[in-house]
Length: 274
Ligand SMILES: Cc1cc2nc3c(=O)[nH]c(=O)nc-3n(C[C@H](O)[C@H](O)[C@H](O)COP(=O)(O)O)c2cc1C
Figure 1 (cartoon, rainbow, N blue to C red):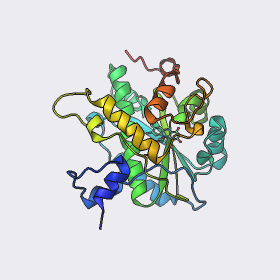
Figure 2: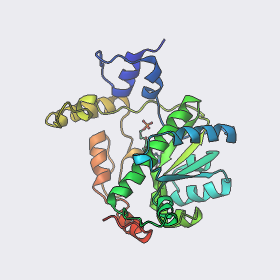
Figure 3: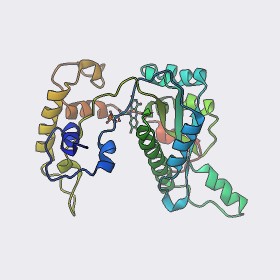
């Protein structure tokens, strides 16, 4: 018997009595990333089923503009973990996937059919990223459904100049995110989300009540899981202190440029972004 009210309370920290949670979607409300894995292997037959589920995600115009690199070689996974340095859940995962946007395959198909590829532009870049993200999300949901855990790793883009040759990524192919995959040692607590009143707009966009709702959200989150100084962003720029809420931590993170060379990288990899 699914307790939808309890799942909503865990996810949002507030009662949402008007929402009726069908049992079929309860696992989606209960999901979370996994950052600690057992030594138990993930069989290829299961991994391939999850990848088939990922490939079943919708894709813009049926263009299927993404690829995924499956890594099982511990030394090669550890290489990426060592570059990143702070995320030991990468090296301990039995499987590491690198989800990539892929403009190249369809460029080759145009060439094969004697036609120009006239869509090397920002829209195509966005479509590759969206296709890739939907497939990764579907993989994560499928993995969670069979008891596996996973954690996306955007930090592969912080070492993109090393990850690109390691994976032999050709021009037109770039990493969107890594994904560590394995059997969870334990399930982390559910991470509290912004209330639907902030994220869901009815008929037209209206963020007039946002500051008040976010202030209350900050308070709820602080009560459940105060941001520890170790979890504070950019501690080297701003002094760490107690009592920082979610929204201030967002501002601390976004006030310092992150991966600002990404557009330049993409241009060197053949993306015009026009
Ligand atoms: C695109 C993307 C990139 C992410 N990159 C990282 C990462 O590099 N390292 C990490 O530990 N978690 C990463 N995460 C996981 C988020 O930190 C996590 O989803 C968020 O804190 C909310 O927790 P939850 O997924 O358990 O609800 C990433 C998630 C997404 C969607």
